[in-house]
Length: 186
Image (cartoon, rainbow, N blue to C red; front, side):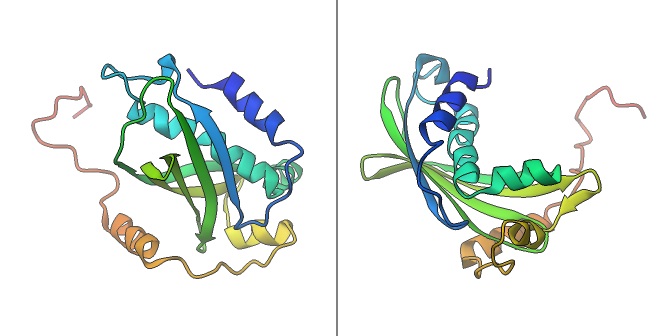
């Protein structure tokens, strides 16, 4: 189930927060609730990705992105991600989430998010997002210009550029193994 109540709480909590530049950092604090847990009584890996919305969407609001998306009839969608899980977040533990836009290329925007317990990083995700319209993908430079911002991205860090190159080499659609029995038509 999507955390709608928590999402609404975050949007209300940050509705009057100071505006951020597009590359600004949004910091929020959360609790790992029992419905976030897996059978090992720790934050479920899939739920982690859902909870990252609680940082990305307020970040979009604080940077002024959401009003521009609404005005233009554009959307935003996750087009890929790479996640590292390093430390457990257990039931009722409080954690801090850090969310920021790192930069963009001709097609996608790249965001970095992480969850922390004190000074210990528990996980980190690189999100590739696409801005969308009825005509397809909207170039991020066009979105930045619509926000009244510089359409040129800062250079992407090498680790992100390497991920982009590696992901471009990944076959799509994936090859279905010969022994897979998916019930696909022959």
